[in-house]
Image 1 (cartoon, rainbow, N blue to C red):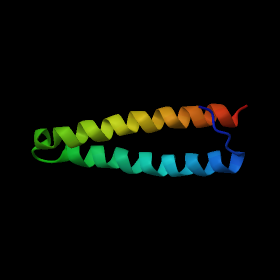
Image 2 (image 1 turned 180 degrees about the vertical axis):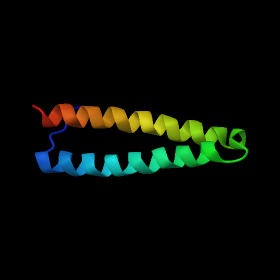
Image 3 (image 1 turned 180 degrees about the horizontal axis):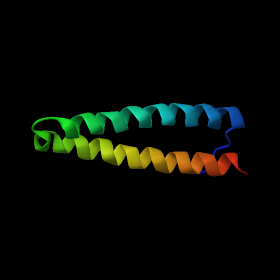
Image 4 (image 1 turned 90 degrees about the vertical axis):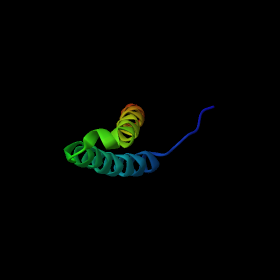
Length: 67
Protein backbone atom coordinates (compact mmCIF):
# COMPACT_ATOMS: atom_id res chain seq x y z
CA UNK A 1 0.00 0.00 0.00
CA UNK A 2 1.50 3.29 -1.05
CA UNK A 3 0.27 6.72 -0.15
CA UNK A 4 1.35 9.97 -1.68
CA UNK A 5 2.08 12.85 0.63
CA UNK A 6 3.09 16.31 -0.43
CA UNK A 7 6.25 17.95 0.87
CA UNK A 8 4.35 20.07 3.40
CA UNK A 9 2.71 16.96 4.91
CA UNK A 10 6.13 15.34 5.33
CA UNK A 11 7.70 18.46 6.84
CA UNK A 12 4.83 18.82 9.34
CA UNK A 13 5.01 15.11 10.27
CA UNK A 14 8.78 15.43 10.78
CA UNK A 15 8.27 18.45 13.03
CA UNK A 16 5.72 16.59 15.15
CA UNK A 17 7.90 13.49 15.41
CA UNK A 18 10.92 15.59 16.41
CA UNK A 19 8.87 17.15 19.20
CA UNK A 20 7.58 13.81 20.42
CA UNK A 21 11.07 12.32 20.32
CA UNK A 22 12.40 15.14 22.46
CA UNK A 23 9.67 14.56 25.04
CA UNK A 24 10.22 10.80 25.07
CA UNK A 25 13.97 11.18 25.53
CA UNK A 26 13.39 13.53 28.45
CA UNK A 27 10.92 11.07 29.94
CA UNK A 28 13.48 8.25 29.77
CA UNK A 29 16.11 10.48 31.42
CA UNK A 30 13.69 11.39 34.18
CA UNK A 31 12.63 7.81 34.83
CA UNK A 32 16.21 6.54 34.86
CA UNK A 33 17.18 9.26 37.34
CA UNK A 34 14.50 8.29 39.84
CA UNK A 35 15.60 6.81 43.14
CA UNK A 36 14.13 3.39 42.37
CA UNK A 37 14.54 3.31 38.58
CA UNK A 38 14.00 -0.46 38.40
CA UNK A 39 10.42 0.15 39.46
CA UNK A 40 9.88 2.08 36.22
CA UNK A 41 11.60 -0.42 33.91
CA UNK A 42 8.45 -1.25 31.93
CA UNK A 43 7.79 2.45 31.23
CA UNK A 44 11.47 2.94 30.29
CA UNK A 45 11.31 -0.03 27.91
CA UNK A 46 8.08 1.21 26.32
CA UNK A 47 9.45 4.73 25.85
CA UNK A 48 12.71 3.36 24.41
CA UNK A 49 10.79 1.23 21.91
CA UNK A 50 8.70 4.23 20.92
CA UNK A 51 11.87 6.27 20.43
CA UNK A 52 13.22 3.63 18.04
CA UNK A 53 9.94 3.53 16.12
CA UNK A 54 9.83 7.31 15.76
CA UNK A 55 13.50 7.38 14.71
CA UNK A 56 12.69 4.85 12.00
CA UNK A 57 9.72 6.95 10.85
CA UNK A 58 11.93 10.06 10.78
CA UNK A 59 14.50 8.28 8.67
CA UNK A 60 11.84 7.23 6.15
CA UNK A 61 10.38 10.76 6.03
CA UNK A 62 13.83 12.24 5.45
CA UNK A 63 14.50 9.75 2.65
CA UNK A 64 11.20 10.72 1.05
CA UNK A 65 12.02 14.43 1.34
CA UNK A 66 15.37 13.87 -0.39
CA UNK A 67 13.73 12.31 -3.49
